[in-house]
Image 1 (tube, rainbow, N blue to C red):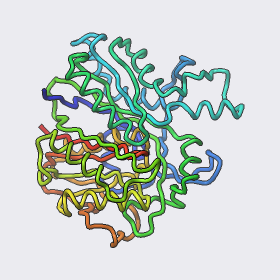
Image 2: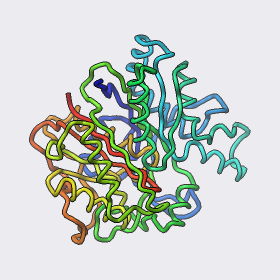
Image 3: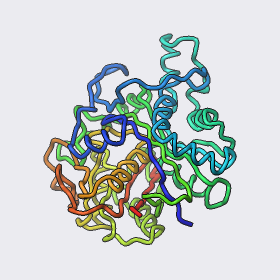
Length: 383
């Protein structure tokens, strides 16, 4: 059964609309990464700016759900058309997150939040519950939380709902918002960058955490972009460190290609997980080189957005969607790190600013890897 990505709504550090995001990504704009001490110590974060929609319900009033609501507003006509065609009982919601509204809990414990606080704001399932309630949907609505692969795994689950005949369309994606829990957690792991992150750079020393929301409409209704393949693996090598051999990562990428019916030489662009930690970039370089060689154009977009954790897979798949739909010259997202490349890493064809294919991009693949060796890779294509 062919499934299509009918629409997408995106917010992240490089913009609050699809046009703005694509423009700033292609120009290598890092201005969305900003210095802050809001979370207890100085750090560089990727922060969404501008006004977000208000939420009246005390059950759902948190920044994570505000990000979701803003993303939903970008795809609302498509969502409404799906509800009108299939009914509210046939449109599901599957999201990924690693934070939900935990920032509200932090503020409440510090006495800095009004009486509007409710524990449900931080529950992992709150985002899916919120969107379903907001839209009056009665089909399955739930959230997956597998750290940084969360919103990628959501696509596998959403596809299954449609293939099983449970839903005709699914709102699928994810959101994560900035909070002390994640910043202090990654600081404790010594995985935060001391400055701007440097994906695949010689002087890389950690991540910049970001926030984002990305929502797609997935359905059987034909559209410009098709969801071709999903591959997942789990190696359980270590709680937080990747297997340096990247064996399970290779498996996830190959399974996605197999599912898509594609060969490695048919992929035009690969969005790398590329967190800018010493271990991830070394492992991913090795895995990608082993499967693709150094042919496929690739980059990490996290040098501009930061690592948006549970939202990263859906966000970066959204970037691939943009490259496939509004990009006749095949412009590629550059690997921005303001650093020299690490020559000790296996060779990759990392896109530079201004690189184009000189033709439309046809097939994109995107990687996301999580704690515990929980990996996902997704292939989408221009129809």
